[in-house]
Structures are given as structure tokens and as C-alpha cells.
Amino acid sequence: MPHIRVRGMYEEDVRSLAPTFVDQIEKLVECPRDHISIEVVPTIWITEAGACEAYPFFEMHWFDRGQEVQDKVASALTDTVLEMGFEEVAVVFYALQENKYYDNGQHY
Image (cartoon, rainbow, N blue to C red; front, side):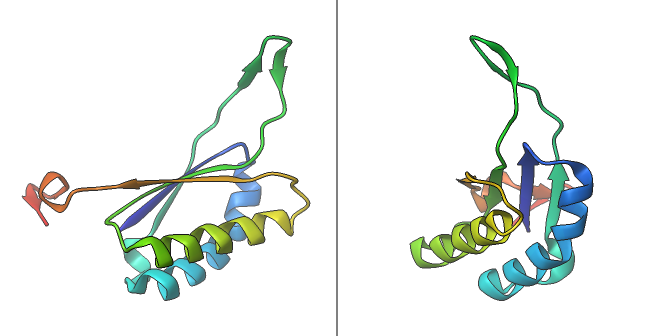
């Protein structure tokens, strides 16, 4: 598992980048491909002026792999998205506790 939630990007764009994201994460995190999931969360960004264009915002939910791996994952995701022409990308990591993550009723 890592689970990635993506906001501020169209589903089609995330679908086109999904193989690249999975390739990158598989190598950097050293986990099986089928443990990696990507979720697109439709969202509306609001400022005091009203609705506005969003920028890509990634939430990475995972079992902590240390700062070095985290930095490499953040850079890989950011670089890939910036190559699409976006000017800003946010990546936030949420470390899950193994004893609080259940898969079919069993914790890790």
C-alpha cells in the first residue's frame, strides 16, 4: 500500500499519468504494483473571489519509509506533473500506523 489521492487534476490526466506514477512508486517504495492505488477526488477550490482553478494536490497515505524515500517520491510526482505544464504541485504525506490499518479485518 501506498494510496494516493489526487485533487486539482482531471481524471483523464491522472489516468494518463497513472502508469508512470505506479512505475516510480514501485521502484522508490519497493512494494508490489498491485498494492499501489490512485484515487481522483473531484473538488472545487474557493477563494474570497469565488471558484478558481486548482493546482495538483497529492495526498500520499502510506507506511512511513523515511525522509529520503519520501523526498524522492515527492520529487518524482512533482517533476512528472510539472512536465505537463502545471506551475505548482503540492504533495502531503500521511504516515499510517500498521496496527491501525486493517485489510479484511486484520491489521498489519
